[in-house]
Picture 1 (spheres, rainbow, N blue to C red):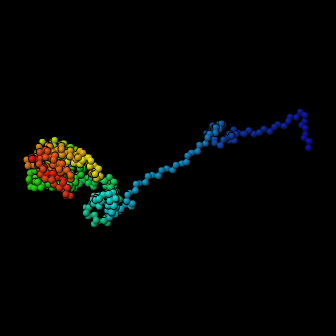
Picture 2 (cartoon, rainbow, N blue to C red):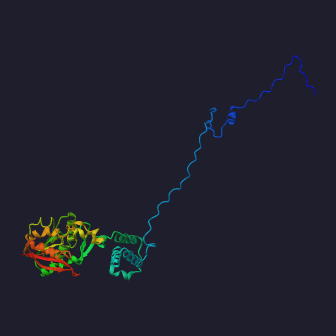
Picture 3 (cartoon, one colour):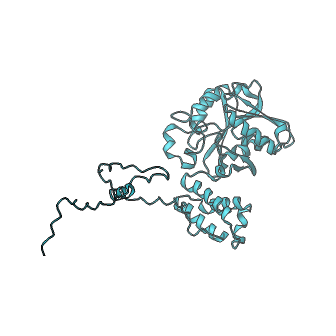
Length: 362
């Protein structure tokens, strides 16, 4: 069909105007995938240029939180719940540590925790042991097996001459061998009612001096030591044994600070040679004070220091008793003779070894 020509002079029809798009609509169309925060109400949003592309970083994989540490397992798993179980396990463990007295040590340690008599434990093996007491037993056994700490040091006490003495790292652990000196002293002064003055050189725990005073109620004594800590231990033992009124403790380097003289002198000096250190048991080498053990290369230095001054300290008719090593009787006797002293007797301990030399003024 032919298109009609417009009439001359007529205006061409107006082009249909497009409806303007609102600014909000235009902004929405131009909105990038990651848009800036929306404008607050009442404020006109402004068009912003999209940020330049940035490299996308991949976060590292999440690490799960570490689990809390689990408690250290007990050596006995499960932990014994009865006295019978503890006695068996304790003896086994100490035996495996190479301790010859495993049964006796385990009984003493367990009895100390339970407040019982070691000899009566076998008659109460069905007794339950709670977790708290079990942990204390375990701690004692660990000290005895791992560090070879003596039972007396674990418990802080030692029986000597049927008396209980407190021991600390400052003093020598009293040995049954040293009871040989007490026995010899009582034999020299058999009258229990007699007056007696006693000097203990290097008193340590005070065991020698206090044992003699316990047996001789009219005796008085002086204990000297170079260690303040040892003197405190000895004084405490005297107090606990009810002997404090008859004894004095004084700091002195052997007899140097002692002007008095005495009818009985006791001394357990250090007498182990440095070369013998490797032969000592761990109980001795690790836990006894070094100054109470070693005395020079041959173990005789303490005798050389004490014996030349001994005659001055002895009252007329007095005797001095010195503990010696099993092979030192001849060497110590020679030093004593050189100091003008008389060798009265060599006493042996219960194992038949030379243990005590009895001296007197010549």
